[in-house]
Figure 1 (cartoon, rainbow, N blue to C red):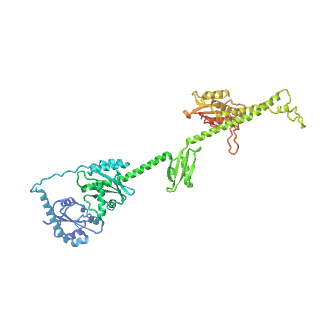
Figure 2: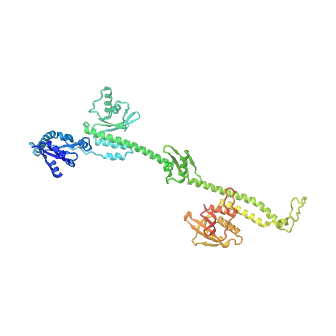
Figure 3: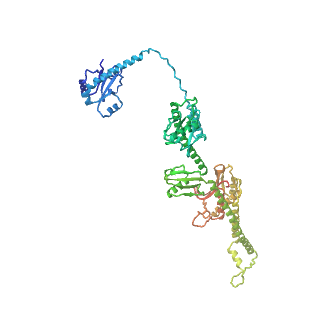
Length: 613
């Protein structure tokens, strides 16, 4: 039966040219689905199709031979040629001239293919004349790969890693003995350190040149007998039957030596394949083990550095603007980057950190190391505070001593003047100077109020003794409500104090002196009113060790000019009154301040203090 001819092309002129060359009329199909069923059913047919026809993508059966016509070197034509989508490929020009020659030969091939397929189908359906006994094959034992999970879990422990691969060699490769040799300087040493092989031994040299397994039972040896005998003797001394080399970066790092199989037979090709697979896995695991050991060493170094050199970091130029660094650290690091030299900021007030920074030109950045120096700064502050106290004490003792002698003389002199006009024995009287010594005491007494000046000097001497008390304060729990109420009542000040008790650990004697000095300074600047028509307010903020007392003094024409002058760096220190200076030091000793000037309700005085430091 001749093969069926099928033509598919969107070009009517090309279809007419093909029909003129064919020996008979081709079959036609109105729908693509009908064509698809025809191409898939059994039988012989020759399908001549255009590469530009969409029906070219239809699937074909085993009895259909396809002739694909298209433009050579075009993308779809070359792709179809590469994928072997047709039996014959022709250009448009060749199809118009030689299509008839090719169709005859293809019809014969399609017919022979159809007959062959029919014979094969009948052979499959017929039962064999003689039944053959089916012998079931012995299933291979199931391999256990649980060792790989344990090996990956122990990458950081080289000994445990080798033990897991040794266990795999015994149970999967059925080997009675497994040894691992690794390079150590100029030799290869087994993991149990009982066997050793020099790096210049013929066995090591042979494995370096032949990256393959060495089976002692099937090894043909080398052409040089002087090399063959040492290798076999070495294998015999180890009791090894199979060697699998291990490489890293193309260099021999060792090998895996397997002893005789547990069943006494030789190693099969499948066993060698498994051994090579195990060796490759061991190479990768050893590589990762080395990396993990290096990471562990780096982590240990970072831990020690964080312990002994806290705060060490290497920063690029862009990382200096990060907010995770303290402001002081960023400032020192930026200065080191700009100056390209090491900058050291020691621990001193008001800095909080001890900082060292230097340039890192490799990354266009800096290395910086900082440490919180708050304890050291606190120690410096305490030492400085103790120095100030000792200075006050020495100043007070010296000032009190220097004032006591003139006071004694002035008091004696004033007592002599108040007696019944007797003339004090002046040295040098009657020396011809013309001074009337008889009237001299009366003239001095009339011009100078000695008693007032003596009182000022005596008050100054008393104030000087407070310096020693500041140097050695004594704190105790004190009710500030009662203390300030007592002081305000004695000075005729109105008070606004809450009923809530305010108890702080303070030196009550020093606070009495401080507030008394402030009230005296206010009264001296208001000679007409003194401390009358003033309002004292007490409130507190915070809790626990941070609890602070806030005192404000309000009133009209409340000025402290000349009493609390603003400090001028170009002028010598001037605190106005010594008593006000001492009051400010007492408040500073209690962690407080004294401010005087314009406020929300006019001129007022703001005082804050807390527990004794």
